Length: 297
Ligand SMILES: C[S@@+](CC[C@H](N)C(=O)[O-])C[C@H]1O[C@@H](n2cnc3c(N)ncnc32)[C@H](O)[C@@H]1O
Image 1 (cartoon, helix red, strand yellow):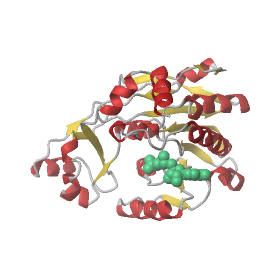
Image 2 (tube, protein in one colour):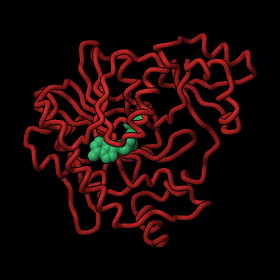
Image 3 (cartoon, rainbow, N blue to C red):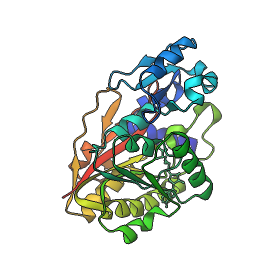
């Protein structure tokens, strides 16, 4: 299996394997429900030296050696900062949210992205079927002071049947084979093609629910933390074919460790529109990620 995994990854982009080895930094953002830039001064007083990213005043990186220690710092214990990967933050920020928007987060636990949406939107509905993860997520929202998130312990695949076209924006951070979290030094133990195909099927069902739950004129983001085209471009192509009113929107990111969506994979060919999707290549504090913005016309 290892051989197949490496072969596939190298076909997508050989830089991915380099990036998977390289974990020198981690990232966090200021939780705007509880704090502002003073949280950074407080961290500095405790001896940390956070580095601001170029694309936000509220997002910072630190060396990986600080990762454990920082959980004892005052800003962290007071929930003024939230440890979150840069790829997750930049993808969540790519959903253009207006202050009157109602946002659906269709696969939400532990809730890091819902927390970002809740800082901008009027209301967020966060859906998570796993009981344990659901209750941990609820606690997470409470601790971080987000009062505008409603939580639902439901299977995302059927949500649209209850809501109809209700949401201004939808984020689907789909359950996936999590290839971006493979630690090469520990070996490729849990990866196999059957798993990729199983997730690909579930993701298509979730995508239908996400798109159906969107108001006409609304926008959604489909995302995964995996590299396999079966779970990424193939699903975007599936949605385009199923819904003639689905349009892929261009996303411009201020980073260079990205690759456009691929349009050929094994014996499959996808719509050229799929090129507008984005694969974030793992590098520094960015882990591997895929996302695509889709409008419902
Ligand atoms: C990638 S994680 C979401 C991470 C989250 N968005 C965040 O940023 O904190 C995917 C989640 O989907 C959930 N999930 C699995 N099957 C699902 C389904 N049928 N409907 C909705 N969510 C599902 C998993 O339990 C998991 O919590």
